[in-house]
Image: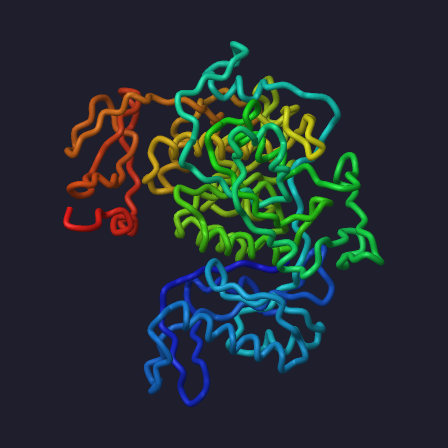
Length: 496
């Protein structure tokens, strides 16, 4: 698989015509001595070339530019020339969540490129898949919505909410979304996004059986993991979006949803399409932003780092662990920067993966979702579970739009119902809860009635931002997450 990497502010210099590269702690460190990494389910002849992160060279005499974007673009130009030297072609480049090239070349060329000291490593591009394990005919039920607004399993056959998530933006990195479905109409809830799949592959579809690009002479074959195989569309993006913000099915009924297509109609993409989607979200998102990633690949340090960098850009990543087995054996669920959501059935029993790479659970079995034929089906897996969590995060963002995303991720765990999940499998025993005390007591002092659940910056314009505390249930622990990098972003402008 193609691997993802971080973005860091740094200077690059050109000395005697050579770009100087130095390895950095955040340059996606090589886990193995071998710099050419083979991956399961590779795309033949396609590689991700990850460059060593740039830094100032003390002996350089000719400074190219102090602009970080221009420096990184210059490094990518050098990397592109290197690939072309060995007969390869560059498909696309990234410089936000990853300083890397997606290239097509022979294995021999890939080995030669990997040996260059300016290259951190080269990794095979590989298949990324959607999460949902099962889709069945029938409407399913709304028990999941009913469950997340209750502390106990005694359901009242209703879903109660005080906020809608209006103002929040969820980026669904998945397959396409049927924006004309009635779940997203009146008003239109699906906004602009990106088709990373087509842009990266330079073709509309990819055959996950033969691992080749499709065209009018070679129709695509759908994968066997889609149940049943869908000849025209893959429901995954639509079903996920409907749980996040559908009119009747959704948690946050006022949220804005952005489709970021990284999977094809068979439910498969590549690491390159996934990284491209994350890179686009990092540079183009509207705050407050959430990235729902109900997809998975084999373990990838660099994809995990890309997810971490997405968080530093102010986007909250929410990931679906594997549908079975050890939750830590796939990315992006391995990344501690993401909020990882396991799935439960109507008895609050964990039915899917286990292990420490799950932060909390949400309903995930026999969930009613929208389908790409304009109707409804039922779906099971960690995908709808992650979508429930993205919806709750959007609710919180809808009320507190200037909160650090790390705060929102921690809030999901802190606000969860504890010790009700049966067989959590080594994961924290927490079940998603969608309601909280909304009678906020604001103060610019250290005092808070009851206990504070967090501390963050609020842009009180005028006059200036002030520290504020938000109360939770009296007796709760007082805890805070402070990220000073968010202060400048939200300071007032002008004379006020």
